[in-house]
Each structure stands twice: as C-alpha cells, then as structure tokens.
Image (cartoon, rainbow over all chains, first blue to last red; front, side, top):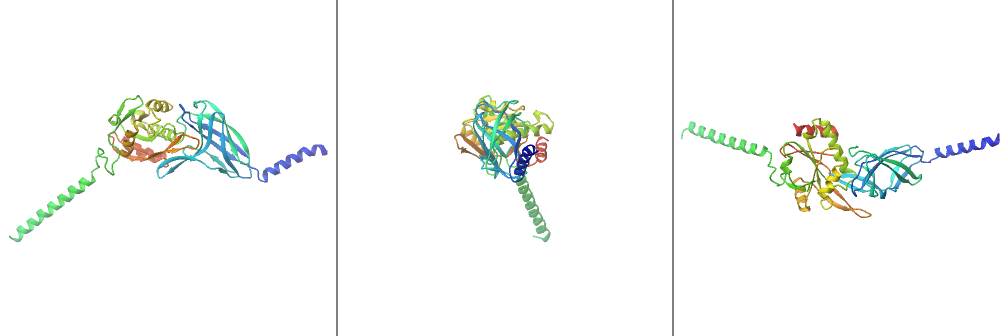
Length: 144
Length: 198
C-alpha cells in the first residue's frame, strides 16, 4: 500500500508545484510567408502561458536560418520601422498571438527560401521554460 | 452728376467687386495641378523602370485607379502584409484585377533590381506593378509623393529601410485621391477604394 502511494504523492507534489508559480508555455499557429532570393522571412507564433507564473521570450533560433531575431514593426509618425525587440513578457494565464505588422521572429540568412507548403522547426527561448520547439508552416504570400 | 447716375455707378462697382470675388473664390477652390511639384501637391508624372527592365511612364497607369505603395523586397513583415491587404481589398472591391492597379515602388533601388523585384512580386497570386530606378529617380518620385525613407543598419550586418507606411490612392487620371493607413479598418479603406474606382 505504501509503495503504491509513493508515485501518487509525487504526482500530487508536481501538480502543487505547477500551482505555485511555474509558467506553462505552449506554442502553436506558427506560420511564415514564402520568400525569394536572399530576402529575410518573418515567422508569427501564438504563445500561450497556461501556468501560474510569468515567463519571458528571450530569443529564437532555427537550423533553417543563420539568425533568428525577435523583431518589432512599429508605426511612428506614419513611418514603418523594424527593430530588435527586447524580452517579451508572457504573463501567467495569457495568450499572445503575433500578427503581421507587429512582433515577429525575423529569419535572416535563410538556408533556402521559404516555399509555400513547406514546414520547418523553430525554437523559442524562454527565461524560465527554456527552449521550446514549434513547427512553422509556410503559407501563401497573401496570408494575413 | 445726378444722384441716380451715382447710384448706378455704385451698383456697377459693387457688381464688379462681387464678380471679381467670385472668380477669386472659384480659382482657389480648384484642385491644384498635379504636374507641379510645389508644396501642397501630390504625385505628378514620373518615369521609372518596370520589372522587365524597360522605362515605365506613369501615364501607363492612367485609365484605372492605382494604389501605390513604397517598400522594398528585403522587408519581411510590413511590405508583404501591405501587399496582401491590398490584394484582399481589391478582391473585396469585386470588380476584378483590372479595376485597380497595385503598384509597388522600391525605396531600396540599390538592392531592388528589376529582376529582384519581379522575383519578389511573383510570390503573390495577384498582379502587382513593380517599379524601381536609379537612386536619383527614386528620390525624385519620393519627393513628388511626399514619401520618406531611410536606411537603418541592422545589428549583425545588412540594413533595413524605414519608410512611409501609407498607401497612396490615385484616380484613373493619376490625381491624388486619398491615403490608406495601415491602422485604419478595412471597411474605411474599401470605401476609399470605391470612391477612387467610381
């Protein structure tokens, strides 16, 4: 009886840990438009933090490109600008969906241009949750 | 001079002043000629280079309204998003691809050769007129359309280009109608397109 109780209490302990402030990061709906030549690409990802603690997106990498950077497009006095974003806070219980014209993961130095219908792996780095993998689908250019 | 003569003369003078005032008001209310690039005008004729490498005169755009966007091919987010939005709006207009020209003018002429532009625009399943030119030609057209752009060095090498985000809407005669802002709703944008296409 005691032996059976041990794994159960371990599970209980784990569950309690989650409630005590661990982030629970889930990635989904990752997509990018196709590219041509040596032009960079942009990936949009939905980040869901179902946990009880905040987490921060600190960076990204992929085998498919020399560099992956968290970028931010902004409209300043009617001018579109694009800059490196700082760390992005993903508050506990919140969902952040990157959409065109805002935050995105910019891929510079693509090993091959992105083609509609292709998919590749991208890793997002989080301060607490570590590296998380997501599969990026290459959509049509007209995707909004 | 009799009093009635004086009265008649005053009436003539009053009539003359009224007519002159009316002419003045009428002239001020007339739209300014787009041929001039003086302050307060927008657009006007230009010649750039098409994706086939041949000169492209702006008069080729006449006959249908045009949505003109200034961007660059190494722009992964804002430029394809704007082109995708224009393609969607043209579909929503529901009059076919001939009802509106979508025009993409490069603000990065050093990198955007006609061939590069052609390759980039062929990603889209919809016809887009791509235009580039010499840096001097591009500067001139930017000035005509009140468009701003500047190169920004990127950490890790290469550069990006900050540029005016608005789309410039021209009527079938190449006259400025309105701008489409990226942060206005599609419904507002569609109304403007309908007005330009009317």
